[in-house]
Length: 128
Image (cartoon, rainbow, N blue to C red; front, side, top):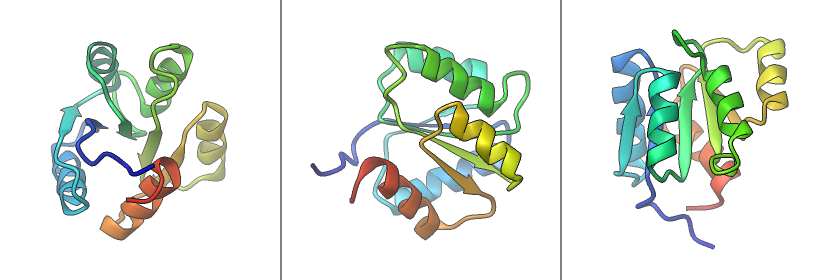
């Protein structure tokens, strides 16, 4: 099944520049329906009222971290199936393990480019 590039993608980061970078990378890959949240709590609210095909979230945010957001998403029956990619500057193995245990779909370490993002998205969504 082909990936719907018109699906809504939610990107979550408390750093505006990173949101812009990820939005631009997604646009390069043909994904134009991108919403932004600046923290986990805001993202959770948006997820509960909207319809998203993918979440790309930063790990380090206040007051709700990306890991807490991931746990909330996976604990919610309606949100649980949404693919979730975690973005972080930390490549510590304990972080990767914690994210995997919480049900992350994939993991990207900053900095990254469009090709890396595409590879991670393809592993989660299928070819596009």
